[in-house]
Image 1: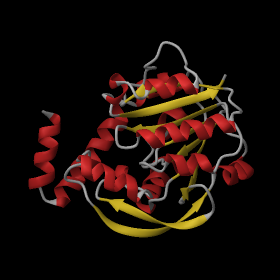
Image 2: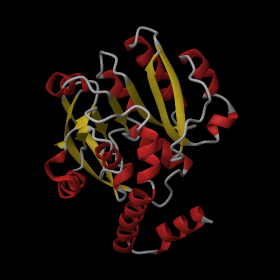
Image 3: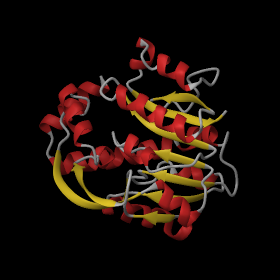
Length: 258
């Protein structure tokens, strides 16, 4: 029913109305999920922990990080979202209006009418359009955006206790800009469109962690561990090919040192 209403709204409501609805939905999500997110992240974020929020958007993860007493560096390529982050959190966080990738450069950034699905990845944009994952949404603007790397941020701000990556299909490139292990890292997945890139990202992390890492995941916005036990990369690679995992559609993979 919710998907049917969303498709109807996207097809028949004016964009000005859709933008207000999406802003309201983001606010409702931010409010309703604040406590579940805080409970989940409290398992590995403590007072004084340093968190990098890569793809911070308007801060729905920043809020629980701060509630747990963490120090937050929020990285967000969309100026409009950075303006909201400044209004919401003022000087309590560091805001970097850039993207992250494999190297320092400038890249085309595809801006959607829903800020949460703007992306650096044209492949991801085309794949999700083909599967109609975001039916009714468009990417109507292209901007040139400066990109830096996780290694550069670590050199400037120190080794984080946790890195959260939510970059709409550009996860592999962001991970390629990291050369040292961190205590905990998560990155968003979307299947089946980018199953191969999910596995590639795990292999990249396996090299960074010298084969000493384990994996788990939280499906969609459930904010609970989907697996009772953490898996090796090999076991996780088998798991992500299973129908049960593909049925989750999206969520976040978590990795930590074994």
